[in-house]
Each structure stands twice: as structure tokens, then as C-alpha cells.
Image (cartoon, helix red, strand yellow):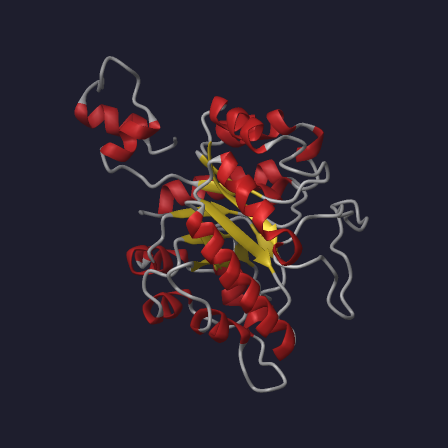
Length: 308
């Protein structure tokens, strides 16, 4: 865990706890810097070729928590839940959260598949989803020992789609609670666009899902792109946002950048972490040319500029 250990030891002398080197658990006990996580979708184009190597580089960069996502190999990067957990733990990483789809994947009308850095459309294999495979996904997440199960996206483009999605989210939230998990919904900017009946999907996602069972993972950049102030969302719904995605945007709000290299002012957002109820946050960069350079740049900025 990168919590500026050198300065800490210089100011307090060599610290030994139970005769061991200072560990992540000791850091938590001492109320030092919050763990920094990374969303593994950042490595979508490279991770399946070398799962252990990718996670090793994540740990070497100073990240201590991970949130898994989709894999071209299927399952959990080609592994069973317990196997993936063992691999992550063996590298000093805590597998904190896992992303799943809310419904069978399909592109919105008129949309094109995102491309890889070499310009080729990404290839997404068949994936399980909450609409059709809810209990299996909940059971697998529980088997893997993660704390959070997150719906990465779900159809919200029409009033009918939104109503059906809310029903799936509520059903999943109840099942997740029974399994000892916390369920959350991850936004993009589309949930803030007004529908034909005048409603805003994100407003209904907040008001018509059961707050006891459905929390929110706020993607800060997508919310900002949609013209929303994350702090205002936190104040209006205190404690509802235990998870965040952290990435930056350029001035056009069209291009994703490493944290701290764009235009988002993260300091007031992180200052409202307690109001949000934030428990974990994950650095993410969608389809970067060099994901490892990106995560290294992001964590350097966070360690230097963010206190949480």
C-alpha cells in the first residue's frame, strides 16, 4: 500500500507491529491513507493474455484493491471465483468488487463498438447478465468473497426499459443482501438524459430502487460529463454511494485521461467522501493506449493531491 511510508517512518522512527513489517491491515488500524483501487476494465485489451502479470503490475504501482470486469476468456479472467481470489490475494491485492451486466449486451441504436488502441472494434464474448442469470452471478460473487456486486450498465433508454431494469435491480439487491453482498449500480452519462415521458433515469434509479438493497457506484467522470456535480448528488442522497469510479476528462468532456491530467477538480469531491458514504474507489481508464502508464500517472496524482 502506497501511503507515503518513508515520511511516516522518518517522523515516528522505525515502527514494528508484532515484529512484522507494516502491513495493509496495520495501515488501516493507524488510520492512514485510504486504499486505492483500480477497475480492471482498464486492462481489457491486455489482461487476458497475462492475468498474473497484469495484477503484479497493478500491485507494483501501489494499488491494493481491485474491481473485476468482463473477460474475453469468460468467467473471472478464465478462472473460477476462488481461484481468482487466491491469485489476487497472493499478490497483495484485495478483490473488493465485481461488475456484471444488467441485461444481454447490445449496442444502443446508432452506436458503434469501442475500438482498441490499434483501431479495431473490441470483441465481447457472450456474457451472463442479471436479467437472465441473476442468482448464478450473485452466488459466484459470494463464492469469490467480494464485498460488492455491481451492475455495470442496463437498458434505460426508454420508460419501458427503465421500468424493467429497476425491477431487475431491486430483485438482485434483495438476493445480494441475502448472500452477504452489497449490490450497487454503476452509471454512465446516458442515465442523466431526459426520456420521452420527461423523466430522468438516474432520478428514478435513486427513488424507485430500495436504498436498503441497492446502492450506487458513482462514476465521477460520466456524471460530470452529464453536467452533474457529484457533491450535489452526495448531499441529496447521503450514504448511498459506497463506491466511486475515478477518471479524468479533457476540456471537451469527450476524451478520458489519467486522473489529475484533465479538467475535473477532484479535491471537493473527495472532501465529501463521508457524506457520500464512500468505502472504496477505483481508478479507471477506458481503452487507454498504455494502461500501465495511465494507472501509474493516476496514483501519483492521488497520493500527492488527495487526502481521504
